[in-house]
Length: 127
Image (cartoon, rainbow, N blue to C red; front, top):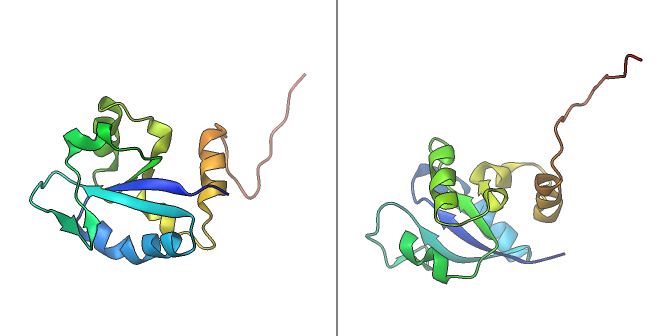
């Protein structure tokens, strides 16, 4: 089991809604929040977490970028990739609300390029 060093991007309603779920993952030792960033560079700290400007993200060592905006996830993901981050390491904050969530299992699935998820998947070859 790894401990993922994470940056949270966004400080709006989705941040407020999910921060306790993220703090729980930190409490059980699966993640460590090393900073928060957003388009509003008016903070020094958010909930005692250091604020990091988007330009300084390149100077910070972290494993995951947690996007705390469900509405603007794709736009933020594109901007993060343009800043040099791997798109597989940019995750939506809503994943933390999944029942029995396990970050290691999620990242394994994320990187394995699975194409179909289904409770009842029927397929075959027509030879």
